[in-house]
Length: 497
Image (cartoon, rainbow, N blue to C red; front, side, top):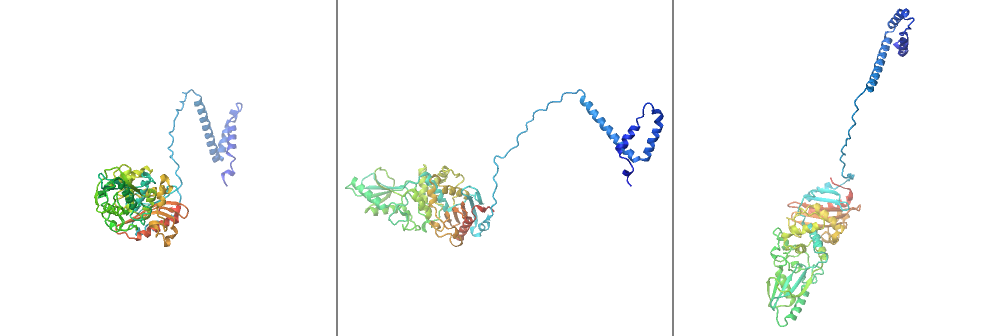
């Protein structure tokens, strides 16, 4: 049996005790002993209840006293409370822009990029519509781009020369009767035959015929006995870069870069690859003499001092020369265009000025060409250095057609279809044939490829791949095609892992 069953509620007991503890004035003395004895008896009978009641009363009295003390304190005189001073909380820094959510991309080409055939891979891939970087392997490192450099030369030519520019070859009347001067102003395509590799090129026979007719009118009784060959438009001593392998000339990929020549100095003017000579200026003179039907003529080199132009012919416009250069990766045309860009920008046409002229023209197109090293116009030198990232930016601009650069983009080879890519993207890579618009490159230590992939999902991807290593094999070419085909399959789902 618990205490709660024997003891009345504490509150009731307390109230009754309080009433009994207040005797009336009339019977106080008479009842005091009785009351005192009654309370003692109650306490003795229910000690626990009385203890709880006493504690409750104590707490009640203490609480009441505290309230009245507070009222008293609040009612007394006091100094006015100081008004709070205004406090300005500095604003929290806010982000300048809310970062965009990053898509989770799931299509990996990491295993393909790790193919040992690719050696040391330098790669960069972006969405050509948005500029978002999708894949990066040392893409900001400047390395030799090989023939991809020709796209830089082509873009500079469009910017500086314009698509309608034509290179000229002239015949000028000499300072004395019997002398004429053959003046080269940079047209490496001047042809000795209509079957020339450079379709539509000016013919030296037409130049010689027109020049001799004009000369005979001026000097009807004086035979031509001397032909001066003028290749001074740029320094002919700058015609061969020391970093170029001599085999490029003997195997037929590169000629001496002189301002006067015919057929790109090919032994066989109808073929892209044909051994080149050692004296393109002299060979051009011999071709002119033969076309003019002259005999007993002395050939000398020098500069024209007269101003009477007997005849002139012009090359195809730059808008035609650029596709001719890009489709077959023509080194001679590239060097010709680079020197013409230099001359038109006020430089002297020497290779030493390319490092200023080509990046300067690209800067004018709105690209950041700082950090580029341009040793030549063709990419044949291993001393050129261009990051893959810059190439993807250029390819994106070419695709846009801005600043007339659509001429360059339209001139690029197409995988499995045209130019230097006509026999590539076959077998398992055939699914990307026709969708890869790109410039390939090759040096003894490198294979490269850069351009635009129109992916299967409709996304245009700008890409640049350099595979570089001493002893690299032709297997790298197929590995680059496989990697590019993987881009085609991934599209905008390409993952940078």
